Structures are given as C-alpha cells and as structure tokens.
Amino acid sequence: MNEVIKAAGEIIASLSAQEAEEGIETYCTLALVDAEGYPFASTINVSRSEGIEWVYLCTGLSSEKVRLIQENPRAALCFSHPNYNLSLIGDIEVITEPDIKEFMWYDGLKFIFTGGPSDPRYCVLQFTTKRYKLMIDYEEAIGGMG
Image 1: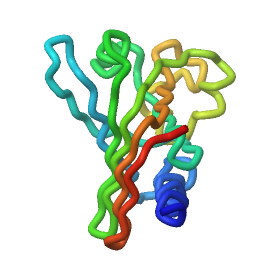
Image 2 (image 1 turned 90 degrees about the horizontal axis):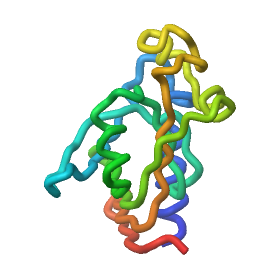
Image 3 (image 1 turned 30 degrees about the vertical axis):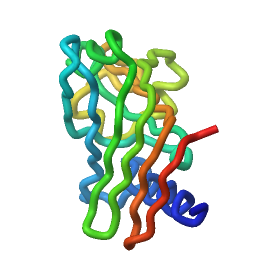
Image 4 (image 1 turned 135 degrees about the horizontal axis):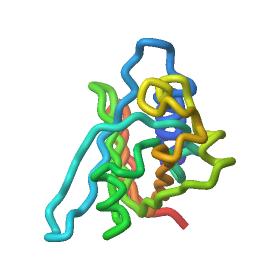
C-alpha cells in the first residue's frame, strides 16, 4: 500500500504545471459542493504538490470555484488515465499571500493574469487530503491521512 501512495504522489508531481513537459495537458478534476448540496466539477491545472497530502492549484478570485470554497471547503480531486485513477477527498482553502502566490506561479498563468504573481485577481487554492482511493496498474490503496 505504501508503494501505491508513493507512486500516486509521484504521478501528481509529474502532472504539475511546474514539472510537466511543455505541451502536456496537466488537468485534474476538482469537485466542490454548491449551496444546495449539489456537486460542481471543473478541470484545473495543478501548480505543485507534496505527495498526496497537499495539492496546490491556481485560479481567479472571482471564479465560481472560489465562491463555492468560501461557502463550503469540502472538495475532491481526481486524476485519471488508463493506468491510474487517483481520488483525493479533503478540504480546500483560498490563499492570497504574496509569497505563496509567487512560489506557485507558473508561466501558463501569464496569459490569464497579466499582472504576474502580484495580479490582484490571482489566488492559490490549497487542497489538503483527508481520505484517498488510489488505483495504479490495478493495485489499490484506500485510507485516510493522519
């Protein structure tokens, strides 16, 4: 099981916008809960990750994602490919601290946030995993963090 968890962390890191080869699509699905309790899903790039424990994403402060997170911080991330399906369930928060925005910045964001990492419209989402279900090459790991 520890090998699957470690491999999942390596897969997520390889998909981050900071690590992936140029031109490679690095999206994952972010699922949130709206005010009526319905799921809201969208694709989003990963900026960075730390194993499966933390995943950092970047978006705009005026996005629907941010509004939903502020109402309900419960979330899920899903990374899928024919060789794996990585589902993470946890909490997500909106971060606007300048040093974190700078650290999470990657070149692909410059087309949306023309003011660079200090663009006031830009923010970071920090996802913290509470539970996971990982399937890599038909090996499975299911559990919780901590």
